[in-house]
Length: 250
Image (tube, rainbow, N blue to C red; front, side):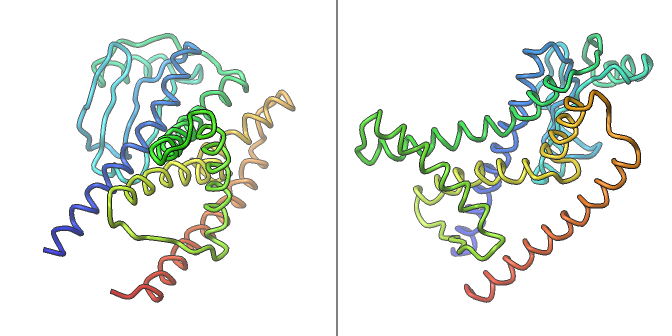
């Protein structure tokens, strides 16, 4: 019976994680639509094996076999060859739209939209908890903003030894887990690591300040630095996991 409960808990956590990823990517997609940027694909997970969840006139929404690994929103930019544009649209069963170059502020707006959605979700969850516990609407809003800022700071401290509470007994704990998933999405995606929004934001800021794209030499230097950070982050995460397993043996 315990194993069944554990499996149900893991299934709920996986569903919440996928929901967190999905809302993040929908934030990117929504702002891209507002700015008139074509997004052929919005995907949960990576790879070529996928299930189409929804197909609109110009976008395919999909989920892959690696749906727990994150997601991406494809943007069609001017550098795409004409053949690639038409081929992509045909293979996806959607109608192509014109591509165009993105100004640095447009790229930054699309990139920051994902974490802004996660931030709004975290605020709403915290606000709902406070209202449910008897706080007035105005007081709950201010407290939710302060609590969310505290939660972000707390998550930032975890790699440096902050305690991790993994108790999943009761609905409230699952709500807290969902809240923290969104907080973690904010913190992790703003790191200047390869493939993450933070790295792309740094690149957009550089282009906005200098008027030029980073040179190949700068890109290679930054890539090496970022891979060192990524390895360090993975090592830290493994250290946290090992420490938790030692302190909380089954």
